Length: 254
Ligand code: PAF
Image (cartoon, rainbow, N blue to C red):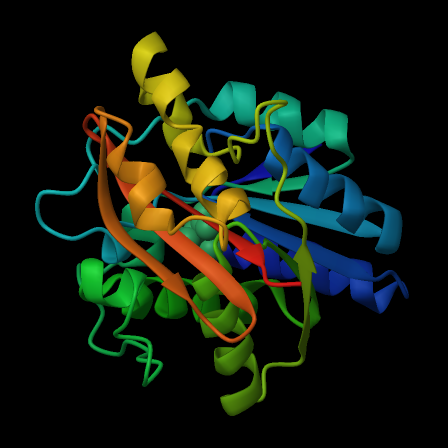
């Protein structure tokens, strides 16, 4: 396992792999790796010769008052999870390595995404699109693996790749859930035991629709505050705050 913290090292490593005829899979993450991330890494390792996992808590995608400073960080544990799942490279740059001048002068804005998460978290998807574009440029042409749990993020990344012609194939991977339906998320570790139980309300609301409205189901859970629950042509999407932790989930409309 190679653990790198400089962009030029990552580029050199992955260029050398491609020059030797090996395919490269990229799994962008913010660390705090769990079984959901492991499933992306395993998928990449099964489809590509080399899998690189990026671990970077990207300040650009956090708004004022969000959980940037408390976001869980444990690089040693992340390296273990990534290695066990089949990664050959972990790229864990500092904020200065990624943004040497502080906030970059050039950022990427994907139009039309100021709804749902984009409305609740202004600027969030500009931060995501900017860092993903940068990671794609550092890693070079490859497949990139993203979880369907962040469904709108996936839509943003697909639009980024299509409109800016990144030579990257975006691979969407199914949401991994606990036995009671709770979607795995790095933020779940911040739930108290009571909040952890209450958090199943998101999946309950998604799976109870259309017999009952999602809002009605969430309203019955005292520890939950609904942010939005919407029925899109192909997806049910929901966001709610459970105590101090904001969680999102979605389900394909069959
Ligand atoms: O989904 C995430 O963990 C992040 O939004 C991503 C894609 C790694 C960009 O920072």
